[in-house]
Image 1: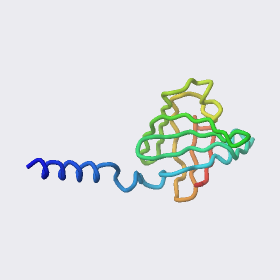
Image 2 (image 1 turned 45 degrees about the vertical axis):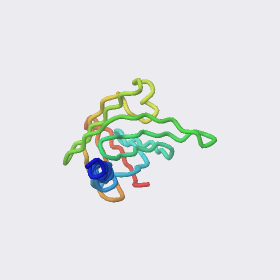
Image 3 (image 1 turned 30 degrees about the horizontal axis):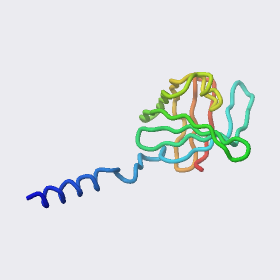
Image 4 (image 1 turned 90 degrees about the vertical axis):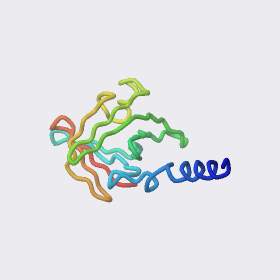
Length: 131
């Protein structure tokens, strides 16, 4: 009887770890921030990444000498909305990821397998590429 219980628990744990390797649709994966457009001005970036898996977001900034800064939080993605909530850092820390606050709501303008465009406050357009 103990053997059957052990085998049952083992298989339950084995198959409950992750569904589809955490795949959650086209937002799944690593996205590189390429540019932010505001009122006709464009600022380009190459060292800021947003990583999405399950309901977790990892913000990552590549620094000189291959070191990184990271911030973790949660996200909620619905059809045309993306909300990021960074809980482990201050507002001044998340500004390096070009976020104005630890709780940010974007409108999703485009989301495909290779490109994502988000709109913040109806005036700042964030363009990402799948990395």
